[in-house]
Length: 311
View 1 (spheres, rainbow, N blue to C red):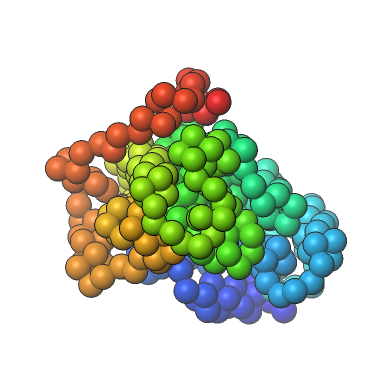
View 2 (tube, rainbow, N blue to C red):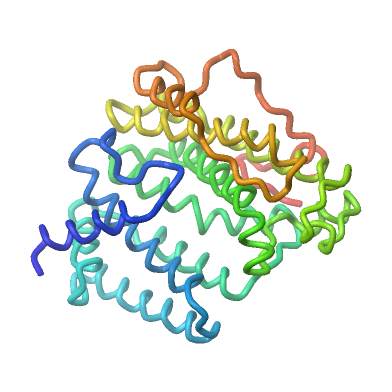
């Protein structure tokens, strides 16, 4: 299979899955679209190994280990005869992509198999650093914009989008897969028992707990929202639209989630119009949007100079 066919396979894979946020969209500069599709296909395949089907955990882990071996060969310039690896090898070579973000993604998918609870927010944040932040870092490398300030802002945005996804998928993750991405420390502090949460009861304690999780996700998104100002052209427009999409879902979560823990917000036509206005906007989030309060982060966690949270 040649490079053109390999990238075509990745594009079809990327567009075959429903996502709230655009994947290799037309807003991206054309040279970035195929590389983004290859990176997405890598993450999608690993996610499927970790989540899909009914195979045993040891089989899932062995499949992820096989991907790690294929990744090592691909970075060494000897990709397996598979369209994903052929396309990814070309992307890695042309953009000199580091291996660490790919390894981090595989670490997160292994963790999906072996870890279903998180003691505190620091542990959950460490998971986000592997499951979400590598995507933003790889995008910045593709755009030639991987400066320390941009990487930190991208980490904030990606962490927020991961926290938002946890809240969207609460029923699917917790009830169907027995994975809970609300820290046990937060549950205990609010006196919320897992059994109550599993039944989808909107008790006052549950509503306060979920409201707190939503504001935490909003805080991280707001913290990274200045990222597009340091980027250029279509890539900056893409990131503005993604940040606006995240904010729209935050607003839907604020409106619906505390009173209905298993609600899954959907973007409305008005939301999509506001997102698309971000293409030409100066800022991802207008100045009229106030900074979210984050009393949990301030009160319970110390934050070092790099923005890392320590319980």
